[in-house]
Length: 223
Image (cartoon, rainbow, N blue to C red; front, side):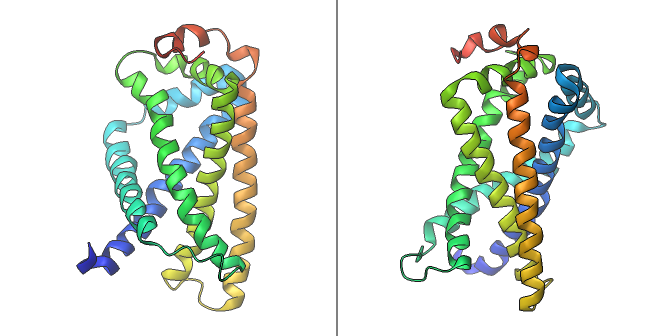
């Protein structure tokens, strides 16, 4: 990796925009359907996604493999990084440090979340129709609820701050004014997307998602 660090970092940066932005936006809209449409709205959104043509290959090559590379190489970058906030305590340096920390948290959270949801569908423990019940039990478990809040905030921050850094590193926002405006835009995105995710998590706690909850998660003793 050292011999091709520039190319590897560019690929890492580009793939972070494609899979992570798709993953965040898709998850935000799907989960927010639980707020707007309740259990049926969420089921309809899940059914729509799984009804897309060649959905397995779309997810494999458009999200999971790029996300895996971005995550694993991101851990390598975080391991090599010199976190010097104690010496240079200004905004961008803190953002650099938090980007690395949030990346590690996001990597763990995403794969843990996938294990609790999509992997269980894959191996037949739950169905797509029962995912609302799965999320109900997760959201009503105090420990999981707190961990999900931490994971969601970390993921959205990593996405928003990463988009700001991507625009700078790829020469799209060059001057100080453009970078300042970009920072305002991505701060607003961070707040809006985080609020929508947390509203969705709150909606899953509702009794209307209860019908398949206990049966769905009995296999893992998560209740």
